[in-house]
Length: 270
Length: 349
Image (cartoon, rainbow over all chains, first blue to last red; front, side, top):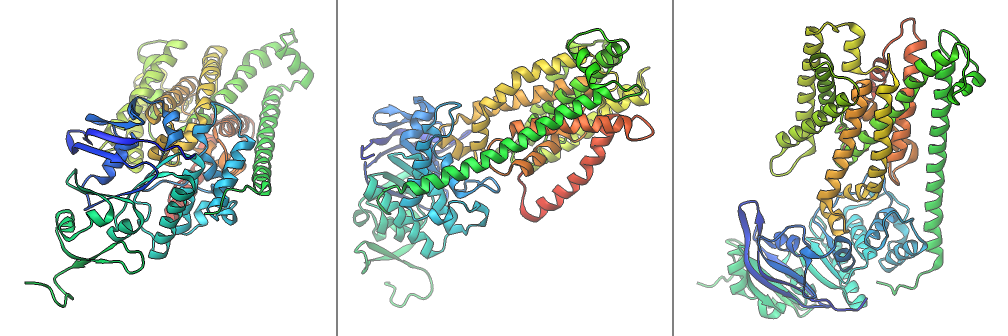
């Protein structure tokens, strides 16, 4: 489970129908690290994630996992290495947490094979590793938004992939649950060496939790590197079209972005 | 995150919960199966003339029994067999659609596929003068064409369930008008015949009509069942299913084509028996609970529903009604109940 994988996009172009959202994009995902993709709405960050997990077929270029094109890999084989949690997954009504988590085992099960003891063990492992044992027999419908998002991550955990892509895993969560989810992903990265790529809305959360930050503008990568290298006033201007002050986060040492609006800014220069 | 030291207790707990649910499934399915056998036998025994179980059994085994060989063997047996087969076909196809489109209203009898098959069957019989397998083939082609038409009309940056259902209801109404028109124009515009093609009826069922349905079940039920796990994963959205290794487009085409073919073949034999496709899945879901595949439980529910409804339609009232009248009367209140509860909490089985 510590095998490091090489995920990369080469001269990638993707879009919907005639419309090209991303054109000629190159990206190298650092193995065993946490990468956050940030950018303004509709800059193509979700599209990029969908192409990387082959939910979208590239118009040109390729996505490579360990040098092999993901679009030519067998579906289940890919699903044993690369997992994806989309933005709004649907929970079948009445399903319990344990059963939902168990569905993550699909890529490891043979066609028509019965549910095995190993599958129960994998589900139990995933629940215990994430402190969700108490939820196991609860129906998903009864959970809060934060618990539910946690359970989806537990399902991705049961899928047991070395690479995990997440599309805005903290959207719609209050700040405490955002931190909880990102802490959980950090645990996963540290304890299992899972390579994590997540699209995040919140620049400061991204800077705090990611090793590697990718800032996108209009379907291109504007800047990428460590948060300290990437997150500066110029990047914020280019990505969000907004002035900002960057300070050191006193709690984590990561850069912290303070937006400058038209009001409530005491000593704005010029 | 805690280190993954599995306490075997939790895995045991999970597997116990799993076998408890499996037991409930087995009990429900066994009960449904026994119910079907019982209703099947009763409908062979009871009629204007009563035959005992031993007579019925001898006829099934192919022995010559005075009177019973004709009444049971030629009249009642194909009818009861068609009831079970058509009910199973409607039940399994209905729940496939409902699960695939994540909406109980999206069953083939509501979104116009049954009506399409029905209109094509009437056209083939009344206008073209065809019968037997040719009618089934035309019904299947028409069912697929209507499914495609509804899909294309509902397509706008992807298919939203509600739009597809509303367009399907509209198409169904148009096709029912076509059926009425064709029956009106033809010499067969009699009441019984009209009811068969608008509400479904087993009157005059023969082996010629029954055998294609049984064969279709034999081929297509295994096809659907081999995709039942994919169907379960697709309930969580196409993206989740694809991320778990399901080839979503392929699975969807296989499931839709198999389900449409079952509905169309059953319709060409028995007419669009009202609400069976729509009712079976939700009833089965309430019986077996929210876990595991609903395909087989729904097929059993549909079969039991049609056998019992046909028996009731024939013998419980003064007049012998077509089966579709009884299932229609059962289905309508359930439709209202479902609409109210969907309104309250958003739809699912």
